[in-house]
Figure (cartoon, rainbow, N blue to C red):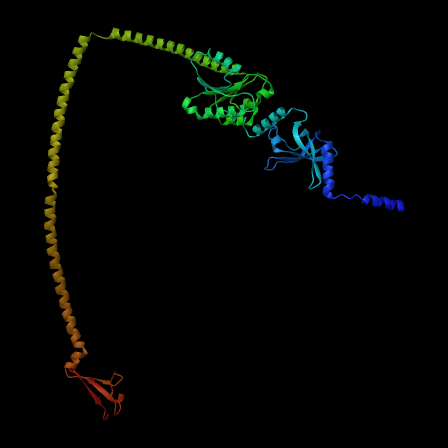
Length: 453
């Protein structure tokens, strides 16, 4: 028991703080694993706005945290995503605040295939999903490409091979070289900028076709034509684009995005010359057919003219007949004109006579006389009506005077009213002694009081 306690006291004599222990572990791990290669599958991948990538590397039994800082991540040609199996080179680091360790990645390679091939497949699938390679989005190729813009290196073998082929064209061509780098880190940007410049100057130069390409090389050498920026520049170009990159076995993203893929730069130039040769050949065939048709038509017209010439009489006789015909037609025309003039004159006199019968002044005078007569008749009629009604009114007035109370009063009669009611008194029994009465006479009235009744 004493030995156990002594051992326990001895262990307690060395007590670490969390910070001290984490710091010692950090120094131990970082010193022990300065650089390591770790193989695993990426999971929980996230890339915030800072540009740094955070993920986990896992295998069948365990996993570990990892971080890939922006300075190294932006140099990757392939896209990092969950489920991708990779080999990472880096160093072990410890985050003391949380006591967590992680792999700080400096380099990353996909397992099973190269980084460039993986980047190629990823970009190919992405642009395919967007419809960038669809046949419906391709521009129609020109039937007669005579103004061509060449986007390539001005010192490479590709431009020399194309110029040799163009010299064999059956008709003159206008070639404009837009010099760019076709290899290296800056090449993709220059190629895309040249495509945009060609699109911008299309109306000024009237280009029929753009050929962009270079000679053969390794996948790394051809990589600028596998960049997304080049593919999108080809897609938005208003001029048909021919991609001529590498050899026949090489296929690039620009080949898929272009309106036409040529196996080599020489094949692109040969496609132009063969197209022009076909046009020239077709024109020659049309010219020969047109010449035969014209010759046949002229021969037929010549025979017809000879036939008519044999049937044509002597010009003098034909002229005399025409002169007699003209004189006859002239005389008939004069007679017809004279007859038409006489008929027109007769019709004029007839219309003038009819118009005289319908002279507005005469019609107005007749209407004015008729109106005066109607006005006099109407005045006489109204006067008779007024006289008749005046006589009837006088008769009614006499009758009214005979029935009027005022007329009765003028003959000595009177009307008695009881005051103050104003009732007419018709019976003496209707009043009593002392009642006030009002007697209406012809001229004025009298107020009375009943003394007896």
